[in-house]
Each structure stands twice: as structure tokens, then as C-alpha cells.
Length: 100
Image 1 (cartoon, rainbow, N blue to C red):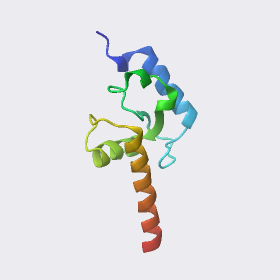
Image 2: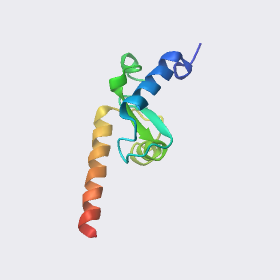
Image 3: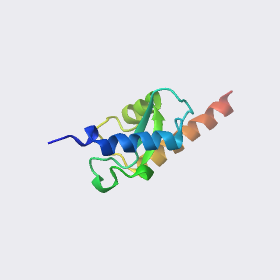
């Protein structure tokens, strides 16, 4: 059985997400761009190749999201998790401004 990440549909989804966003939605970097599923593709099969279920993250922000926020690349990720992560980043940036 062919893994879904090695299919042409997945490659097209990934390219379309990166082309749409053009840069990391967190930091604006254009280096090492990854297409991240908003709702985890393993659990939300019907959204697996939906471009609206993807967001472009650079490698660093993608790793930070999975390893620091979710604690694992295998953890079930949803829109709620991504929204909370963005809110946390926004809060941390406001604290930096206040402290400086």
C-alpha cells in the first residue's frame, strides 16, 4: 500500500499551499518552507488534500509548533491548536515590547 505522503495528490497540495502563502505565516521567512496541515491529515482524511487545510511554515516555526507546543509531530493537531499557538506567539511578542 502506498503511503499518502508519497502520492501526487499530496505533492500538489504541498506545492499549492506554499505557492498561496509564499512565506512562513509566523515569521515571514522564505527559507525551508513546509506545508503544515491545520487539521491533522491522519485523523481528518477528508481534509487531507484540501488547500484550505494547509498553512506555510518555515522549518524552524514548524518544529517549534510541533515540539514546543504540541510536544510531538505525531500529536493530533486541529485548527484550535494552531489558533492557540498564534495567540501565544502574539502574546509573547507584546510582552517583549513591554519589557524592552
